[in-house]
Length: 101
Image 1: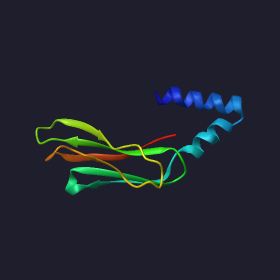
Image 2: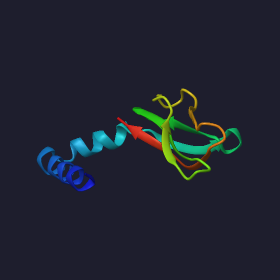
Image 3: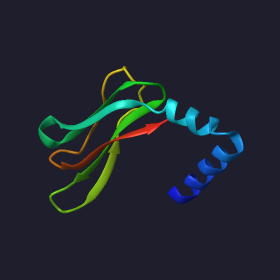
């Protein structure tokens, strides 16, 4: 998937003289961070600049070893934290910011 997207961006850059690539870079949120919340059972993400949308995505792990995923709501930069929670008492084992234009 990444290889296909990279080929499309390279083709668009060659054909469009770099305009498409520059527009895509400008639309993605920046100054982002994610963190664990709620004593290890939740996650939050925030972005402060540019346009587009962002949300938190977390990986939760149960005591049994079962792994599942949760995502927070899509927000625009500057509109607060996107939050998600695991089922109690499961724990967050990974957190990240997901971005889209």
